[in-house]
Image 1 (spheres, rainbow, N blue to C red):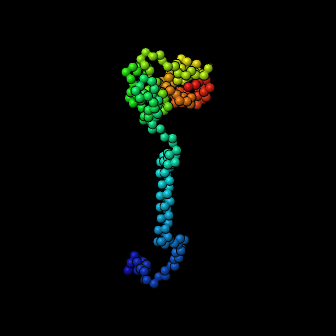
Image 2 (image 1 turned 90 degrees about the vertical axis):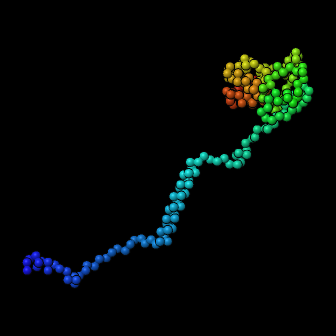
Image 3 (image 1 turned 180 degrees about the horizontal axis):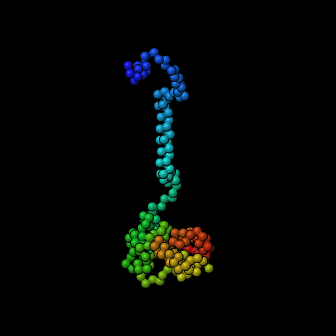
Length: 210
């Protein structure tokens, strides 16, 4: 027998060798199926909540009904008085946004009415009076302002520039607003004129009248 065969014979397992005892460590955490499902559901809920909060933060706030309802609605009607050379003098009720021409359609100017002196494209203001004169009649003067005060409804652009902080552009804007929207109903209505803010209004409030 060769040496190689002898070594192979000596090293051949006989099945009687002692097995070394091996101790495996006990698992530190045992997770049953029910517990695993609950843990997965909790993680999913957290992720969904985070995503919903992120989405809500990116959306613009929706106004509440109370906030919308609190806004003052624009009156739907205006009531004006038409007097003078018309067939139907008196009060006329029209839709908001109507013009002098609409009021004259109802009042029916007489043949001698002078419509040239009226701005029939002027937008009506609630409480306004339209005086239709006879052709050739002298203009009706508006009530004069209090002494020392400038009339917002009668002063020219040049006269308005004498007010503090009112330049040519602002004076022209006041006249344009008056012609487009009718006479000013209050001094505070100047805030609707471009170029006039609360500070400028306070500076001229005691110097003007209607």
